[in-house]
Image (cartoon, rainbow, N blue to C red; front, side, top):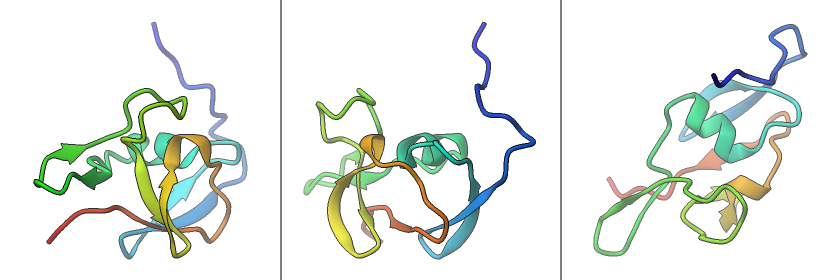
Length: 92
């Protein structure tokens, strides 16, 4: 059985994803936070195909997002920090 390793009593951080605020846990990666809040896909290919975190170890680049104005950052390798602004690369 899978279980969360996050302690619900830990202090919470706040991140903004596509203009909405969400809670995050210290030590959690951006990809884990997005998956936990069901904020997938994280990007679209040029042809419009949805993509989401896949390998979770930095090999595939499927999880790239814009973080604090920096584009194409791998969400699976980046720990969240309080006040972080995350933009998923989705077309309207």
